[in-house]
Length: 74
Image 1 (cartoon, rainbow, N blue to C red):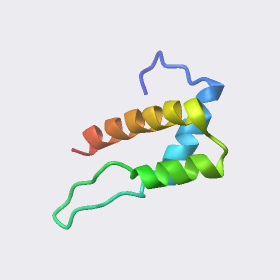
Image 2: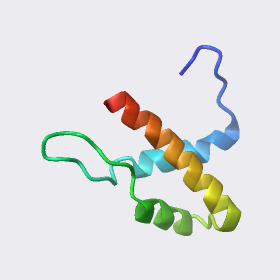
Image 3: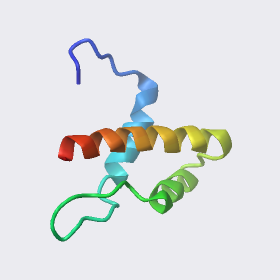
């Protein structure tokens, strides 16, 4: 995290979700990882009453966090 970054309270839901879902992906036999599956994100959202436009935002932010993780892993 950059030195000047200041986490906000609303960030917490996304980081908790990512921590819960981060291993719910395909891992290749020769290495490499795919994105967290849509099914995993959708199920998590449904379990936590994240629906409608809130789900679209949730899914987008989860994808953004996960994309950064995948870049880091590569």
